[in-house]
Amino acid sequence: MVKAQLDRRLFMAGAAGLGAAGLAAPAIGQPAWPSQNIRMVVPFPPGGQGDLAARPVAQSLEKLLGKPVVVDNRGGAGGALGNAAVAKSDADGHTLLMTLSSLAVLPEADRIMGRQAQYEVDQLVPIARVLADPTLLAVNARAPWKDVAELAADAKARPGQIPYGSSGPYGTLHVSMEMFNTNAGLRMNHIPYRGAGPAMTDLISGNIQALASAPGVLKPQVDAGSIRVLANFGAERVPSFPDTPTFKELGFSDVEFYIWAGLFVPARTPAAVIARLREAMKTTMADPEVRNVYERAGSPPAYLDQPEFMQFVRADSSRLIQAVRKIGRVDGG
Image 1 (cartoon, rainbow, N blue to C red):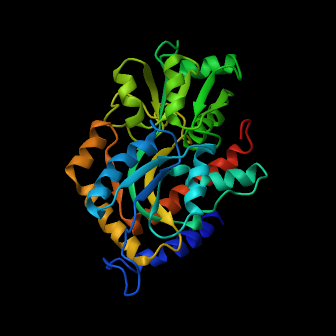
Image 2: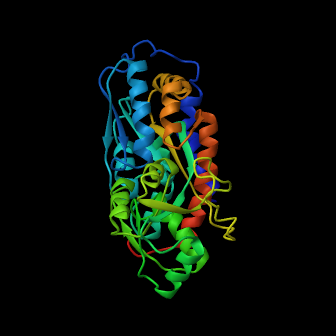
Image 3: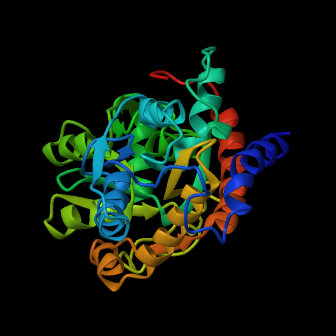
């Protein structure tokens, strides 16, 4: 049921862009694009995976399209506020969205909590995937736990007393941690933030003790000695953290989570605009300077063009929605 709904929504939203893959200029009678500055909304504060993905892309698109591309960090509600703002914006190609894997989860979370969804997936059209990293579990460097077993034992002994941070209720960082809690039979204290950046600040200061985030976000702090990483939510070890075991290696077979970042536009965006954006993103993600920024951050590029990205979003979103339904209603949601 979930897969069928996502298939239908993503197909309807993306059909115009797929049918216009060869177009590079506006049709007769349509205004030239871009005709003004472009706003790239990141639905999180600076310092997180969405922001890391957005800034090199914005700089490249600015050069390719000939207009300023301004990154607009609009955090709140685990990313729902920024996602909804773009979903409801004018579909003229001047408002873009660089969002994360929680895109399809957040409307479902609203329904679980008995609220009206702030937006629906079919209000947005996927353009290209930029990054796709497994989430990693990090703790404050002064915390006593040297591995997941020690953390789990302490959490079981002190239910609800170990605080962990997230980018907001049912956001990427929250869902990944709740997967761990559910499978390990733990109850930790969820502290929601407006994004991964503020949560990271409090992890470093010790106001929270644990945080799940992307390798590129965590690596500078690990290198600085402020935090340490205990486990990897992916199916395979991460090259930038080769000594960090996966949860599957540790016996948690159902704990698997990836934090991808991708570019979207509002539905009904003109097909010619979508085609130009796809071509610009193809050029951007092949640019050695852009790729180098991501690789230095420990988050290698994972480009997918629209057709492949649509298939990826369908599969990943279906899996995450099922996970959220299993987690169910949680405190702080």
